[in-house]
Image 1: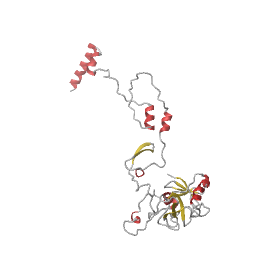
Image 2: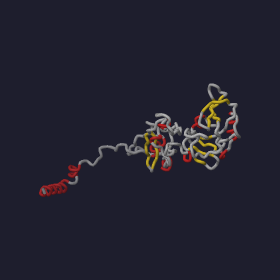
Image 3: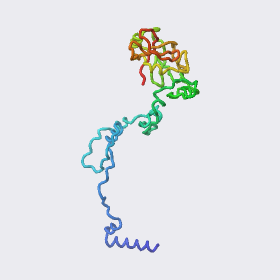
Image 4: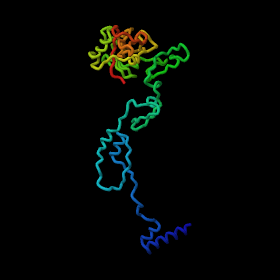
Length: 286
C-alpha cells in the first residue's frame, strides 16, 4: 500500500512538471459554477411585512440585476414592530379550541393553539353554589369560569376576585368591570329613569362614563352560595342594600318594565319602571 501511494505521488509530480497546471484539472474537475445561486435572501421590507401583516414574500436572488432598492424600513422600525414580552400571556385554555394566537414569551415568538370551549372555560361564570341538593345539580358540578378566584371548597373568594382601587372604585378581575365601591348611588331608592340619568352626573373616582349595568352584568357579581347580600364572601363593597336593584335592560314584551336583580338572594325579575329601586353603577368592562 505504501509503495502504491509513493507511485501515485510520483505520477502527480511528473505530470505537473511535464504538462503544467492544466493536468490537475483532470483530477479536480471544473472550477466554474454550473449556474447562478438560487434565491435565498429576504429584504428588511419582507421581514417587516411578515411581522406586521403575516405576508410571506418569495426569497430574492443574490445576483444583483441593478442598484439595490430601498427597503422602506429601518432595523429600529422592525424591532419596534415585534411585540414586547407579555406579563400575562394567553394560555391554551383561554383560546378557543381550533384557533391560534402568536405571543412573545421569554424572547421567543410562540404559537398558542387553543383548547378552550365557550361555556366551560370562559364567558359563563360559576354561580358560586357549592351545596348539592340532588346528584347532578349545580352544586355537584360547579361549572363555570373562575380564573382561579375561588376558595379551596370552590366558592368565590371576594377578597382576591375584586380589587379596591383606593379611589372609591372596585374592579372585578374576571370581567374587567369597574364598580362604584358604594353600592347605593341613589340617593336611596328611585325610579328607573332617574337611575339611568343619574349615571350622567356620577363622577366617582374621577370617571365620567358610569352607567347602569345590564341584567347579565349585575348578575355576574352575584354569588348563589350567599345571601344578605348575595355577593362573594370578602367583597370590598359598602352600603349594599338587601333589596332590588335596577338594571338598564328593558323588558321586550312590555317596555314599561325593566330588569331588576335582588341583592338579597340573587333573584331576577322585571318590574314597573315607575317603582323605586336601588342604584349601582359600573363602567368599562370587556
